[in-house]
Length: 373
Image 1: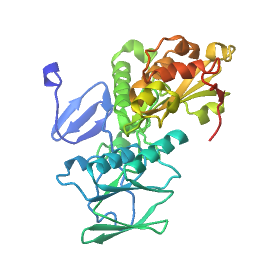
Image 2: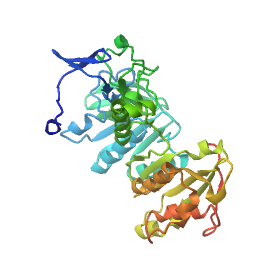
Image 3: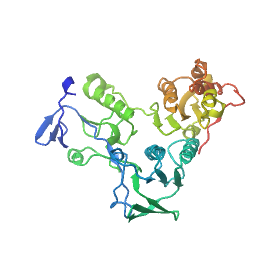
Image 4: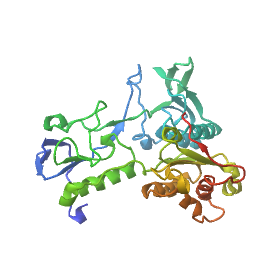
């Protein structure tokens, strides 16, 4: 930062007005201000939990000794990733998830594949179950669950959500509004409710990913510093931003789910990896690619329609998903994916095959109307 002429001040910042920020005894004046304070882990109010030395995604990496047993509270991406990592290191792991499946924001089929993989790694899952009480023991804690089970564990890792880091910023004092969860309200331009003040990243409550925050930052900086862009500002759009859950297998997702596309006459084509030669050769057939498309205004499903989304579950899902992200970003006809030659045998051939299924059957598989959950 210093090499680029950027001054860095260490300390807690407080907004004085829309053009002044104080850090310790220093006041910084600027025509534009960007708030990028991020988010931290939510710790739920559960009897006995506040008196226990819990782990989160932030301090788990400070461990200097491996816990013999671990309960993970929350079966979202962070919970599943860390649970699997710890299990593969040799820790006995249990996941407690209140929803009716793991990775509740993903397609149901993706949740099922990941749960099978976690169980194969020896992880016990308590689905549709909540933690009711924590009781300290000599070696850790006894967890009392809503399904009547009791777990004896050495450590507890909490991964049930994120909260915005805004304490001490004086948002209310300068008029920066927040939503009912405390996240800073922003327009798609990343502007807050105060002129000249922008917010980006996790503190906005939008997509909580590093790459999404980077995109928000670029948009905020461009809109803040360009006079022309203030007349026609850039906007943050989520449709083409992918996300990946780095379990094994990975889960890659971008755009609309099947249930969302069902509301707009969408179609889906699925390639099970048991029919994909690369997956067969790699002996990793427990996965799939689902391509979601929808009709265009006036043109309908001509040339396959418009690419709306995809979910990929498999060893290279985090790489394969970006081709579909590009298709969404450019408003591509789905037929273009079918026409693009893919090297054989590769994981990404699943994209070409799925797109081809929109036009004719391949190995007995075609497409079907999108269905609600």
